[in-house]
Image (cartoon, rainbow, N blue to C red; front, side, top):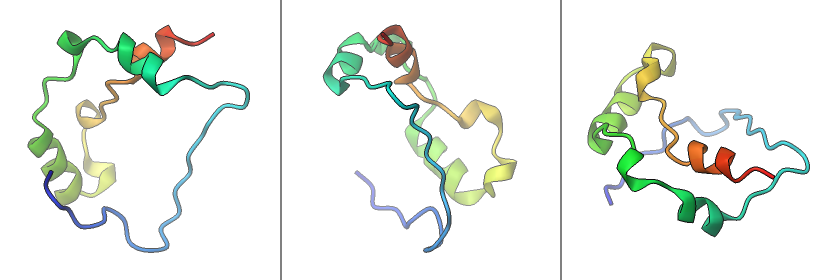
Amino acid sequence: MTPVDPPLAAGTKVCIVKPRGVGLSTPTVFKSLKYDALSSLDPQDMLDTFTQKPLKKVENEWFVNDLEPPAFFNLP
């Protein structure tokens, strides 16, 4: 693990959306994760991209959520 400075200034507002009535078990999602389908982007390159560019300048290819496919697979 590499220590990093906080990515946002103190007091920055962030909105997290969680649909009501939808919940998934973390172990279930991880058990469904297909490791051969994980992003091939280098984690250090991703960290550098997000810490060195303004968020609005980061290209879409860098926004990766490897847990999204198994989560959608396990939706009730």
